[in-house]
Structure formats: C-alpha cells, structure tokens
Length: 97
Image 1 (tube, rainbow, N blue to C red):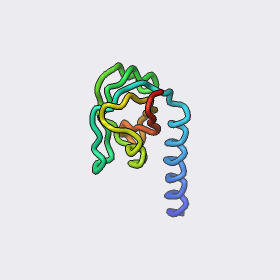
Image 2: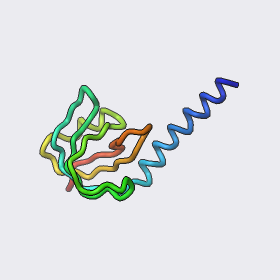
Image 3: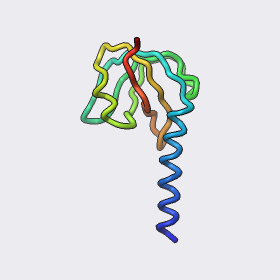
Image 4: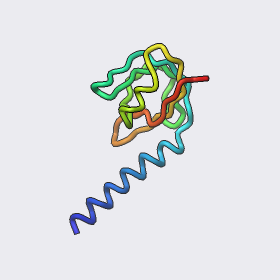
C-alpha cells in the first residue's frame, strides 16, 4: 500500500511538471548569468502571466540542467517558466530568433 501511494505521488508530480510546461506561455528575456553547477539561470525577463510576475531579473532553477547548454550570458531568449515542487523553474529555453 505504501509503495502504491509513493508511486501515485511520483506520477502526480511528473504529470504536474509536464502540464505546467504545456500551459506556460513563452516569455522574452535575456540571460544574465548561468550557474551550471547549481543548475540555475538568471534571466532579465518580461511579464510572466502564469506566475503573475512583473518584468524583473530573477534566478530560476532549470527543470533539466541540460537546458542551460543551449544558451549563454547575453543571449536573447524565449522561455517557459512555472512553479515546480515549490521552486520557480525554467521548463523550456531557446535562443530568440
């Protein structure tokens, strides 16, 4: 029974992260700093509607640290962010075209 509860919780958390990535809009920003060892990125961003966050410079956790390999400080980007496990998290990031 305990294993079933643990499995159910794990599935819930994973599906929540996937759902968040699908519903969050792309937001424009600029990479200020990347801390690959901590899996974090500092972004100067526009308003993030799904987080009710005004434009500012903010540190986000990367959902997958591999996301940070695609960008560097100074890059103009488009990204999706949401709250995952209570932390502000970048779920998708790409260079702006």
